[in-house]
Image 1 (tube, one colour):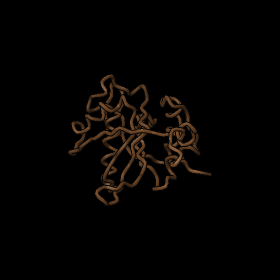
Image 2: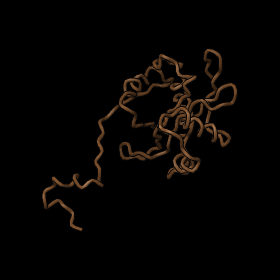
Image 3: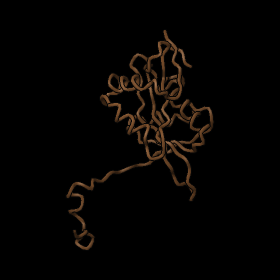
Image 4: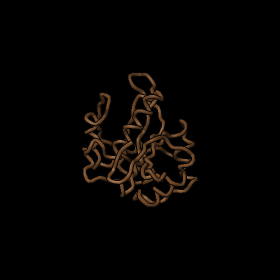
Length: 179
């Protein structure tokens, strides 16, 4: 639990009763727009590796004021398959955004820490993400704000459209696939 100027925030795992509150949070606070109940179910409850670990932040009036999603995945490390989570969709009500996000007690980091603790208890071994570029500096603070020793690493990434014919226009003829 964390104290703000006038309210308390409790951090916990998603329960079915939180569905409407999360949908409202997406609509009102995400900046990405609303999602439907069907999208929520498909994206977060019915994934190929099972239900996502969803951490919610709830104020003292039982209103969902934050969330972060951890989607289950698998990863190969040194030839061994491990359980992994992909962190995404951190949303926090503007009423609870503190000016200094580098503060250890910021609700965004509190949601992450609770998620990491639950993930560890459930046997997950790694959390990864594809954050917006502006978040990279903050994510490098993790070793200082996490209760357990942790390492962070970032890697360049690229994307190539396979639908755009220009992608293949510069290939030599011998590499083109004939249909």
